[in-house]
Amino acid sequence: MGLLSTPFALIFSFAVLGIMLYRRVNLGITLNATALLLGFLALDWWQIPVKIYETSVDLLTISIVLSTFGVMLLSQLYKETKMINRLSESLSRIIKNPKIVVSVLPAVLGFLPVAGGALMSAPLVDSEGEKLGLKPQKKAYVNLWFRHTIFPVYPLGQVLILTAALSEATISSIIIRNIPVVAVMVVVGYVIGFWKTPNPKSTLTGSEPNHNFKDFLVAFSPILATIVVAVGLSLTPYGLSKQGFDVLIATFIGLIVLIAISKTNLKTFTKSLKGWGIYGITFAAYGAFLLGNIIKATEISTIFESVVASGNVDITLLLTGIPAVLGVLTASALGGVSIAMPILGGIMALSPRTASLIYISAYLGYVISPTHLCFAFTADYFKCHLGKIYKYVVPSFIVTFAAVLLVYFLVA
Image (cartoon, rainbow, N blue to C red):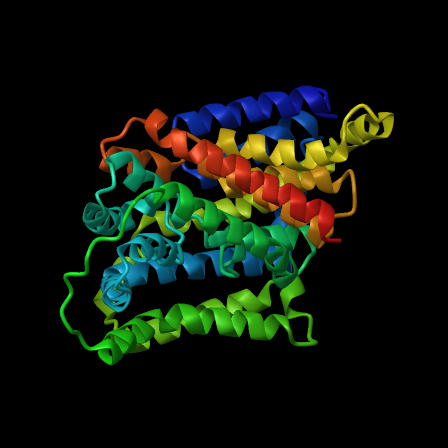
């Protein structure tokens, strides 16, 4: 047996996790260290290398880890080849309405899941927001909120991929349930962000719409190719999605397309591989599976089972409260899902319905977390106190979460 009883081992390990996150230790190091610490405290020591081995040779783990690496490399290559600039500039020339530009640009750049990525769209939002006369806190809110509207329905999002893997639900089944929630996020963001804000008179002269659209299509094609291939493979009868092979194959096809259209040379490609962020997030994906396997081995879920069986706690409260609180505390949707999923999976059979609820709860908790990098970077860029941004974020969160619960109870 371990050094401590399972509840105390879990509390102590998560306390250490909280300290590491507060000290901004890389999420990959944090999740793996927490997994090893929990195993050391709660399991027989010989079980730890066994769990590491089982996690390392599991096909699903391998494919998700490699997919994560591919997505992060795709993101880094977009920046190094300047294709991200071409993407955003062509889009801003196509769309003439500043409100739509300010809304769409952060969402489009959201296709690149980099830590603190809202900082990439901040200058563009700042420029377009000036045309609308938006105050700094409104610009900050719009940049933060719309940046995060795309992920719940983006099939290449690492957290969505992990959620599907841990719950054994298909990515498409979770996305379908998330579509109404995303629609509400967009509407509430638009209403709160541009309330009583008139459109300025257009100062744009005639441009070449066909050329602008061609530029956008070329710059967007690697992402589009990846999405189309991933969705197509997930619909095949070969069960590729169950082992994560659909996203893995699609991601590397997207990389090939990007390398081809940007004519990436060896120097640029090598430079993209030097960023620590690629390996940190990849390591975090592995840590999520290792932590999940060790949590399962501790059988902590039996404690929650007894709580649920007693009827003292509503199951919906657990499905929303645990991941949401973890999302806030870890400032990471990945951290919230990877910790909550194995705990809740021990209480009940996870379905697309419950998996979607866990995912969205962790995700919204992460979005509003004050230590969320996008939040911190956005506030810093626009020179806003967090409290001024929360004035808009909190009501947006409440309305969106109400929509989440509505979908959960009304859609079987």
